[in-house]
Image (cartoon, rainbow, N blue to C red; front, side, top):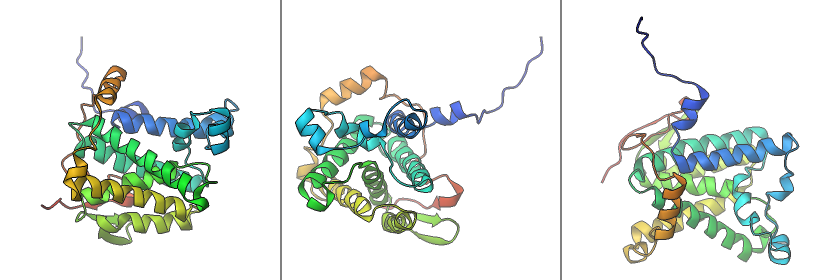
Length: 247
């Protein structure tokens, strides 16, 4: 019997499994929201947010499913998935590596905050999806965790991570995105940063509840053996970053 040396595999399954579980579940839901209507399995209208349907017909699931829709042109949606992968993997796999429930709670905070904005601000009432908001929320939180890390955008512009959400908001607008959506995500991200980092008293109350921890554990979403490193810079060559967190 001969011994065959097994090299590292770079197949789709290995790539998929390399993504931390909570980010992986979110990305899978977003891909499903794109593919299902194209295949005639589900109607996209069942995913999007309609306050009338929520309050009048008790279609509560819309409060969740709209965050899986990255509405926009194909390139715009691809950008959102790329950003979700890069910064979600960095945060869940490094910053929240030992506390994935807190990462999930952070996303829940971002989702609830953007929904509250949408309900309170008239110009946002008619927005059918808030997935892009949550992507910008994620990106903003990452940029504040590693503000001095240098990021290279498309091999053209280098800037500190602190400015990254605003640069990408401009790119998103050019690619057909909604600037209001980008702004909502950035504002929600800043609120999370302020309450958890700047205002320590409030931060003590923004901890993942036990029911969330137990729920993630029962679903197997709280266990991830990967490690993206201490600073976890984006790995895509178009958005390559390098640097080290200070302080």
